[in-house]
Length: 472
Image 1 (spheres, rainbow, N blue to C red):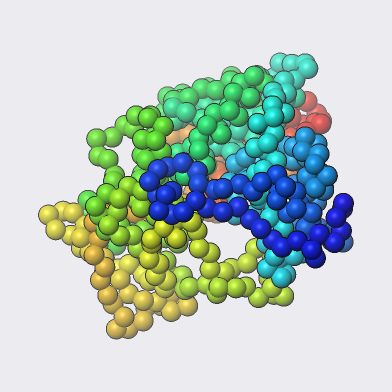
Image 2: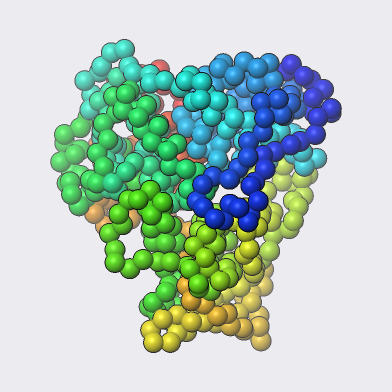
């Protein structure tokens, strides 16, 4: 490393948020980037540790010490090339990844990890601004046709890799625009959608064919697609939400998070949404059930829509504010995480189980809850009620949607209801069919989807040509 004593001389400094009073007035990104000089200083903190555990922490195996050193030496263009060699879409992960690489950083032992995510985002944003990110079309065509179902991060990563080695790639997306969860699930204040659009333009120039508004399994027979293609990749995600089947669940005003969030994303992009029942938090007491990232996104969106109050309920006990480093490092730790949305005015309550929804005139008005212990056993005498006008269920996803695509294909499922395929060849039980991303592994991170899409592309290329120059 160029600055072997940097971690001793320079304090950790990260990006800041715009003030909450300003950012809740719109849906724009509010992260304030570091200056070039400050980013260079932060890259200098990478300490040349003997074993860079950040490699293990990063699902796509980013060569983090290498591009940190390049940024320190102000060789930004080479840093961008290095970063893109392992990650097709660092502008996505630089914004929405929880950064397990930083948890694995050796300096995390003293709660001062290198600001890896911030540096990654700075590299790719600079690369686009300088025009270094260009289409990379294949020099020759293979004549092999590949259908990819789903245009989320797994499908897009798989499509880009396969197009770059000369295959004829067709991506089918049931929604009007490409991006999957990136476009319709992640709020614009966390990631603006022009970032997806410019990648789609790059991929179109590389020869990828996009087919929006085509729901394979409904509009198109998947068996006909398999017959028409040399390979088909299932990358449709895990879209079946976990429900809460308790008394009063049928009351109006109770919705899944993934009915609520996509509506607002479509409003921001002025894309029509096909329902006459808008879900809005304005003037309402909002209860978000579920303590993960999706619940946090519901909070931020509800605040921007003008909710009177927002309360987030989590059935698990409150995690510790700090983890036991000697016990958990370099693995991802369980600890209390406060998002930007929480800071915008939400109340959080832990170890709470919702027992019943109560309403008036068919509309939800109250939740009946009870406190639970660490084994999620109800604590006698701890029942209480919460007033509510809108309830958003953000308790995660249990599996892909089986009806339609998977049902007609007849592919085998694993014990959790995901498409059965291993991580060596990514082949499903049907000949010529592969699966990757959340549809194969279950609900996970964007960075894991990118990894699986890249690895599935290498498996498909090997299947079609006998070998592959694509990396895993």
